[in-house]
Each structure stands twice: as structure tokens, then as C-alpha cells.
Length: 563
Ligand SMILES: Cc1cc2nc3c(=O)[nH]c(=O)nc-3n(C[C@H](O)[C@H](O)[C@H](O)COP(=O)(O)O)c2cc1C
Ligand code: SF4
Ligand code: FES
Image (tube, rainbow, N blue to C red):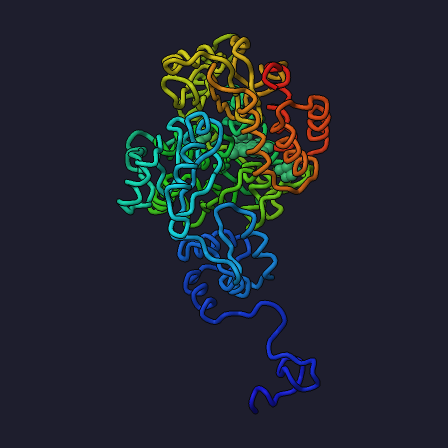
């Protein structure tokens, strides 16, 4: 029977006048479906792989067309709404509806976070926007790319341009290679030749996890992701819950000014990997997930290669380490948001309790460690707790990796005693940049706000900065000079939070936006800003909204003449 003669709700647009030829909603495009099936290949159509699949489509087609998203939803047996909400959450995806034009083939992302702004990223952004045909090249602002020591930074495709200028960018475009520049790093073969994985083998043969835990506690190892929770204690919490258990490595490193994790992974990735396998052994984790930010394409490549080498060498079972690629969302560094993302969802932080040690990935007890924490776990296990506990400076024990950028002569990662002050740090970096006089510093990312140069004798460690209304966090130190405005720096920080707030709770979503408006006025309304700050601290769900007022409060306190 011809289609137009059929009757019934699915069959005909005629009949009783209420029928339809197709199901309701967006139609499945057979060609797009075939393309999605080909891209996914034999991969299992699991919900938690949604973000990985979105990457496959975005990488191949340069955007996510509505037809491809509809096909992906069909293939994964998800609703279009579920796929759409994830695709639109992450900055590195470009969902495009039927009435929109896809983005041009080439995208340049210009970092506009603090260290890059100090180094002239705004002028760079404008020059690039004016200098390129928007039909061919799209120029976007983007948050910190973890290369603050070579500010200003831009990314073309997956290729980063350090100390970027319009001229350098033009040359990269002409050369046409948009792959990441791969660093020289220690491969598995070299690491093994130097005794790597011997500790792991020994522990697996009959080690005592409580002894290793004791070593970490004696070393004084605390979470290097920023929260500073004693790492050994976490093992006990996770083990207290029945298996199966998981381990997740937090490689999101999105706090502007932080680049220590990238630094270590681009040089000695196996220290992190061995530390991870030791921690996984200690809590009897059934699987390890590594959540690596998409802004680190070279690290992603290193990890893919080295995980395959570990499998090949029989050090881990195939599939035991599951590498997941972030998609441009700072909030996914917050551990419960990271877990949501690993499950293939939007990165919305969870309400606690329950804590991830009880109820983490797929509802199972999950041990979350930062990349640098794991690096130290491998080193402490091999070299003994003294490598940390044996160092004392300014009454503080241990060592810290400071990511230092801004107005210093030699920005970079500095491994120094935990009692280091900002003066020590500037000295280690060869002093201030020429012609600059020290004025202020961000001690630990924008969440920590700004301190004045007069507070130059405080050890930059856990617990030492709290009396000054701030904290060390991930030790992302940015130095400002007499040529910089503390007020502009605070505004930059709040703009970052405004853009990166997941939007789940009103005090943070609306609070960041209002704060940016109030801080953009010629004169700050101090009373209103203080009121707003208090509400954000008291009522935000997670650390983003709770810490976002720090820059406001500290600038009002220490730089009143600027506001
Ligand atoms: C807004 C926000 C962002 C965060 N970003 C990161 C991050 O990028 N990397 C990280 O390791 N921890 C980050 N954390 C801390 C994690 O939630 C968690 O404490 C950490 O990954 C635990 O590992 P650790 O104990 O080894 O530090 C963030 C926390 C908050 C509130
Ligand atoms: S505080 Fe901000 S980032 Fe955190 S859950 Fe609320 S809206 Fe999301
Ligand atoms: S790379 Fe631009 S601020 Fe970090």
C-alpha cells in the first residue's frame, strides 16, 4: 500500500486528519546514523562513554550537528535531551542545530586568565579577531591552559603557541600542523631501567598497606589538589566501605595559574602511574580512572602510549586503567563533578554527604587523588618518608611544587620547602621581571584572591594563610607589580568564576554575575559586595561559589584606594 493511502497514527498524514508519517520529535537521519555507528565501531554503547563519543564526533566533524546527536542518542538508547544537555555543558563541544551555521574549520583559543591578561592577552585577542576572516577562523577567549609560565598563550586546534603573538600564530596557521608539540619524557623502558615499578611489585607480592599508609602519614603528605586532606587517612575511609571500589586520578588542573601536574606528567609520567597503582593496590580498586583535562593534548597522548606500554609489559591488565578526556569545564576538577563527568554526565557537583569515599563512581567507594599527590606517593614509597618529613623551613615540614607566573624573571614550577615565603619564591625565580616592583600576589589560584606585598613573610603552606582570609590551594602563585591593578586582577578572577560556575545553585550562579557587574562599576559598592560575598560563602553548594568572594574581600581589605 502506498504511504499516502495508509491509515493510523504512525502511518499517514491524511486518514482521520490526526495521523502522522513519522514519530514525533527530531527525525533520525540514516546517513548521520551510519556515520556515528562507523565512528563508534565496536565500542560498547555505555552511558558513561557519552563524552568520549561526543569527542569522536567533534574531532571528526569539527562540531556536533543535531543530526549526529540524534543518531548518537538512538545508538546509545538515550533521549535526545540527555545527549544535548551533556553536549552543551562542555566548552570544547560545538552543538549546532539545523538553523545554525557550523563553526569554521579553524579555532584559535586565546587564554584570558590572569597571567595571560598581565602578559597582554586582551590585545592579542583583539588583534586576532580583527586580523582573521570569521568565516575561516574563529577566535575565542578561553580560561587558563596550564602554561602560565609562557604567557600569553593561544591554542590552534590542539597546538599551543607559547608567548603568542599575531605573527607567531600566522606562522603556525601557514604551517598547517595543529597537533600538540610532544615533549621529551621518561618512557616505561627508562623508568623500569632505573628501578621503577619495583616497589609496586614488592607490595603486590605481600606488602602491608597499613605500613605504606603510615609512611604517607609520617611524611605529612596531604592532598595536592588543593583541599590538603591527609592522603593516608583517605585510604582508610575508602577501605572502610565494602568493594567493589574504584580509584580516580584528578588531572583536571583547571585552577588558573596551576601547571605543576602538567609539568610532572610531561616529564615523569610513570611516577604518577606507579603512585596510582600503589594507591589502587592499597584500597583494592577494581579499576583506575584517569580524568585528564582536554587542554593537555600532549599529556593525553603520553598517557595513551604509556598505559598501552604498561599493558604490554603485563604490569596492568588490559582495560584496568581507563583514561577519560575532559571537555573544557573547570568545575570538573571538583571531585564529585569529576565523577559525574566520568559517568558521562554534566559536571554538576554533588551534595555531600555521602562523600565520594563512600559513594563515588557508579555509587561505589572511590579514592580520588590529585596527579601530584600520586607522584609523591611513588616517591615516598621508594625513597622513604624523609624526602618530605626531613625538610624543615620556617617551622613548616615538607616540600611543595609552586606554579609561579606573573611579573617574575623566570616563571615556572619550583619545588621548594613548604615554608617558602613569597620573597623566597621571587628570589628563586631570579627576582622580579625587569622594571617591575613587587606589589601583590595570588597565593593559590583565583579562589585564594590577592595578598599585598607587605604580607611577604608568610610561609606559603597549608593552614598558614587562613588567618589572612585565604589558603594555599594548589599553590598557583601569580605575582603582580606596581604596573598592575589589584582591582582588575580581582575582576578577572570573578569573570572566570562567572563563566565556570556550573549554574546549579543560585548564590553562585547569580552571585558571580552580580559581583562582576558591581566590580565593573567605577566605584565599588562595598556594603553590597560584602553582603553578596557572605551569601555566596554561606549558601553555595561547592568550593567554587564558596571561595569566589575571596578576591573581592581581599581587594576591599588591602587595596581600598583602587576601588
Ligand atoms: C571548584 C574546585 C575545583 C577543583 N579543581 C581541582 C583540580 O583541578 N585538580 C585537583 O586535583 N583537585 C581539584 N579540586 C579538589 C578536588 O575536589 C579534590 O579535593 C582532590 O582532587 C582530591 O585529591 P587530593 O586529596 O590528592 O588533593 C577542586 C575543588 C574545587 C572545589
Ligand atoms: S557553587 Fe557554583 S559551581 Fe558549585 S555547585 Fe553551586 S553553582 Fe555549581
Ligand atoms: S595559561 Fe593563561 S593564565 Fe594560565
